[in-house]
Length: 487
Image 1 (cartoon, rainbow, N blue to C red):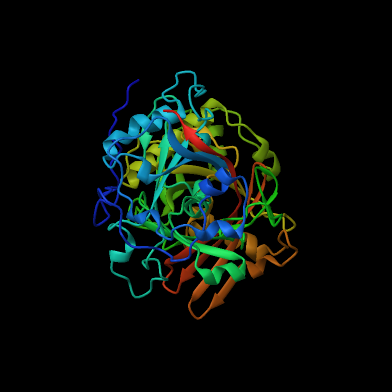
Image 2 (image 1 turned 90 degrees about the vertical axis):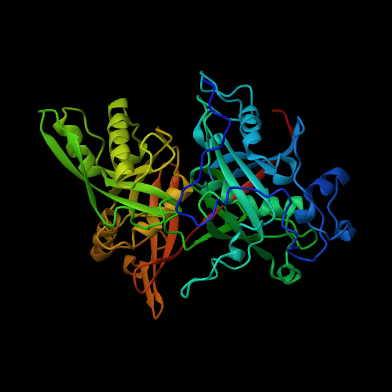
């Protein structure tokens, strides 16, 4: 059960190993405004503008430690439909090979009973996550060349972070991809910790935008959220929006992933095709072909339609899944469905030049078009995460849908065009033809996904040549606790 303590290597297509952390933080200050950290606010048990008299030096000048204390300072966040532990990078050893035992101890992995009772994990992949956050290093995109059509994706960033998926049962430490849900809370945590500062101009506007650099994918994300003008910290309790899978309302947090294509493979279409075919054994011993689409934006994802999946199940003599979108969303996936989807996912991984044995990448998702013309959503979507049916949807998969819908000829694009052409109204009563906005720079597509628990709206912005400018969605987050965690 003992997994290697060495973190998994990142993809080789990037020009440098951006997971390497230097022994000293980048000395650049982000903002000069003097604002309190969440720690000082909590210790004083009050929030007031007078707290902002502390030094305005950010944590970027603090050297990383050679060892980690036990317990270690940490914050527990809900971000989107996930929960995870957030760590300030300065509290971790500068040698990343020492991180794995810390992360396993925090989460309570490995656990043969799949409960993680000895740690902060919740026994499922969406509750067994860690984010390491710090100031930009020399590997941040400020040192990379800008392309002519970039939308400031390579401008200076405010924060650098690494996402860590901790295996529940096996304790495997996986940094092969990003987590869109926990990305929701990265900028919030960075302000809480004093890693970066809110520009003074943002105070009067009521919102702050923090630009993030994700080391797992080598991609930049803009996150925008309300701030308390008195403290300069995120205000998460405004009743602005609700999200599927989370009770109540909270402040709206906008996530925009810039130039998201090729997050893992370096290409939007890793196989070079909008559609691919995998071969599967039917019950009569014959080989059946299944059409899929393999798209890599925010995270690599395999897309297939419910109708094609049911056709394979029928040929194998298995009961099929419900065809009605609302019933499909409520359905559980029997073991024979999970095994078939894993077979498809592994074959697609080989086509995408990825390791088929790494369950985190690629993800696989099944959808059913909701094309009766009166539906609140476009596609009914179910997704697997680490081999298990997700209770909502991974944000990176939702965002990959936003990219795939603009890929001409993909199974998602074909379904979307059929829905739009048939007309009808969306959840706000607007004609579905209005989902496509065109201008001189390209087009913007809006897609509404029905998932277990509600509806997720996503947007994709595309260049004239079909490239993906950005994908975006709204999320919410909540601070759950701050203190120290034992490992």
